[in-house]
Length: 111
Ligand SMILES: [Zn+2]
Ligand SMILES: [Zn+2]
Image 1: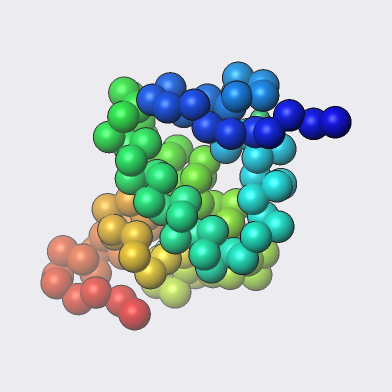
Image 2: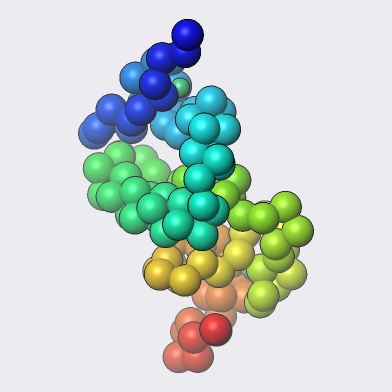
């Protein structure tokens, strides 16, 4: 029987193993849900975590909360990277993409 891997706030650690949440097991469980919905949920959580955690690097937060929710063949529409993609509803500043940042400073938001 496995314990539920839930988040403890504001430390953002896992109730079951004390690892930074979402731990590998939490990710595995969460990936069984609808990925588009999951991305939206994780994006919201990431924004909250950014406010509650000290010493947070946006790129590290992105990997922790969102990178694993992308489809395996999903690529960034702007720079072609497989490590991130623009996600609807996610503020561009939370996505570690130089192409997105450049587009954002010129006032053009990508679709
Ligand atoms: Zn866990
Ligand atoms: Zn990119």
